Length: 524
Ligand code: FAD
Image (cartoon, rainbow, N blue to C red; front, side, top):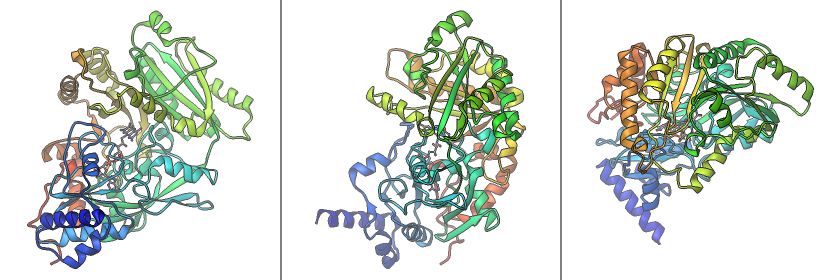
């Protein structure tokens, strides 16, 4: 009875949002999946950033692609119109998956939503629901001894959410971002039609959606490339006191991407170490049993700021441990790190991929996970990374971090220029990720206002010095900034928007296009 009443209220809400509509379609759309439950509304009003809070008009919990088709048809065809955003796991920073009270959030991730993953062992791919979390994709493929090739550092993110951006981690230098490892997509476009697309089928939509910030359609299925899964990982950290030595060695290691497996590492990242406190080092649970020396004792000898290069070598049950040792040794010999600073550990592949989750549990237990996160992610061209180091790390931040700072390079030739994602105009560019947490503490340097202000200073420094950075997981508030961000790609991006979502219904939380409910382009 209570459930029925709630449902009626939800339908009434939707009628208020859309005004006069086709009631048959409304009932079909909303039969059991629409909700205005207070707790659910509260939870989708927020995201990981914890900076922007906006309550939607209603939430749709789809059980199939058809539920999404019905909703988007309604939004597109009703005279009043309303906006719709897919929400994966809500790990955006600036309300990118939010809609406001005149919209509906489509909650893609969550238990019993969408069909289960289907692995095609012989063809080496898996078909997954757009809201599937990467941790569950991994669990399903491991049953067949297979795994996706390209990852994010953290696995509690949805497939639709990461491929709407790019999806990057230390494998990207070799395999490209996650969007370079997708064979096919099923997408419900802004006109409410289902379209299957791939490199050679409806390719304009395929490329638009990859890195497309949710602007062109809702991804309901993705076909992800797989490889035989390694069983174990040799995980190594080496330290540098000198920034240019650190970046020189990173660039050398990623230049080996075309070499056979035995002659390169499988994962290359890096980060800045200012101190060993939890808030700066929560990202991983690394411990080196063979070298338990404290990093701080090395820092005491080499200056307060160290740079850590993080690399891995994957291996299989059948691998010969001695040859793994030799391969690692041969690669390390070519590098110029602080000699006593080799930290090594060895662990199952799954534990390595899921390393950030352990750290998440630690932070949660101390109440430090749900704080505001004014994160800033930038792609910096290789030729300007030294200027960035001087102006930002040493200058604006004064070597204070307030959270992990990741720095690692990638090869542009592993990224498909046809996709919507925007990267700098150089063969090699760095990800610089300032993953900062704001705290209510007496230390003014850690407040949200202070950290947000530093982010603004960093962006204006890059603009004034013409560094040529591009934001990753971009956030802007005016269309002109989006036009500047896309540069030469803007024309194609806006043309694709006109074709696939002409009323600008989708993912309005990105603030790229304003909804156009007066448009005559919809079918009447
Ligand atoms: P949401 O926040 O729910 O949505 C993000 C955007 O995608 C919204 O605009 C939404 O409308 C759209 N969207 C979501 N699902 C769909 C869909 N099915 N179809 C179409 N559009 C959709 N990124 C990396 O690349 N590498 C990392 O290592 C990495 N680590 C992270 C670690 C943490 C702790 C956090 C919080 C984020 C990290 N990210 C990383 C960023 C992350 O990839 C993005 O924030 C991503 O969007 C999160 O996925 P989500 O499912 O939470 O998306």
